[in-house]
Length: 264
Ligand code: SF4
Ligand code: SF4
Ligand code: F3S
Image (cartoon, rainbow, N blue to C red; front, side, top):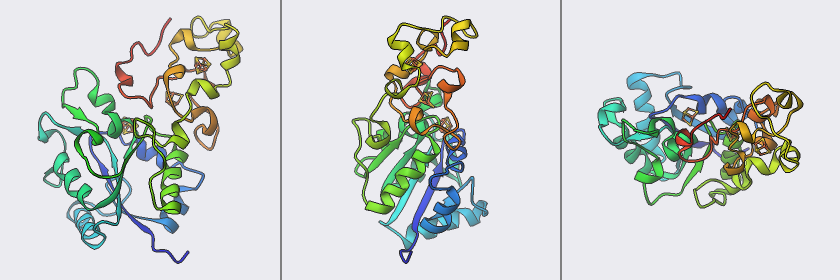
């Protein structure tokens, strides 16, 4: 309670903002508790009241005051084909990330855009979109994967860093193991149907109504590491498979090119 709140800079690059949308729906802890009691979100274009010069001044001030101490969070990929594709406050995405990364104690790459390029990097990748870890070296960096990541996973990794003052254990792709060490398939409540050879053959058939396995209509759960089957979404209400939709593999690199999304 006496510890000062951790200063945070949250950048928005080539993205759709749904990682932020996910974040504000966290329940464990609530995003209100986190923002008011634990972190000081000094710069984020989506949630901050300031805009324009005032907003940029907040970022500069935080960097200066907390050099080496602030946490850098990045939502979105970096364009490498032409810097004009993503500029904020007159600076290119690459320039902003390089400047902010230099004084950061650690970097969190939110979602598939920042971790792997996501939709902007889908073939033919017109902007030359690249993940943060491909361009920034020499800083502790974790990839909190998903499109978007699960809200409670996002706040969960922040709480971990606040509690232990270090990065959690990461897998070979830089994802925190505590949330990405099992396949969606391993915790799927439809798994018994998979094992028994009971499959949905086409959307809305009788087997779909019975809740059989979605593998034959395109489910990527067997190749996807995430916590959706355990933590779920919207206060543990549901997740894609529970609403009858195959897993698209949204926490894996290159999922937009893992076509087809659906099979019939
Ligand atoms: Fe949006 Fe997905 Fe990128 Fe997050 S990872 S910003 S949800 S496109
Ligand atoms: Fe595995 Fe997908 Fe079938 Fe679930 S629905 S058991 S994740 S293949
Ligand atoms: Fe994404 Fe598959 Fe979970 S599509 S939300 S990893 S069930």
